[in-house]
Image (cartoon, rainbow, N blue to C red; front, side, top):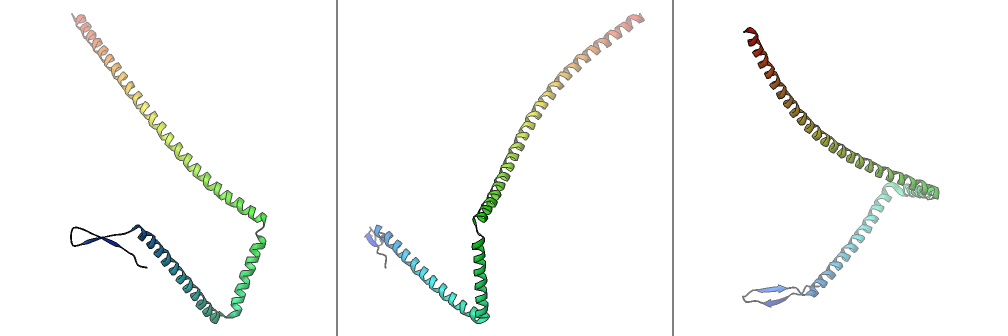
Length: 169
């Protein structure tokens, strides 16, 4: 199928191609047809390849080994079919549930641990800030006390020096 485009004349010598709404449907049909053809070709090539590979294996190993392999596969399949009882299904479901629950609990533990760590950090930061404020307040109080005591010591030294001078007289 070909795509039909209509042209509209313009003011110059060139023309502009305008796609009609029907073209979108046609291109989708073309695409679907192309995909179907490619899929059929792939299936044909795959089945032909399987026949060729099967022939090469048949010639290489012989029918006895192929029959032995097929019978071993059949026995294994039969064994699985016979052992896949309700009890085995229950055990498998329990194991899957335990694995799922373990994974989710580990996620919860890591999430809770991260939250606790964040909360402890916040508490420590708050406590540190409070301690810094308390240290600053105590420092100011001590500096005030030191200056008051220094003034008192100077007053006492002044009184002592006057008393010495009065004693000497």
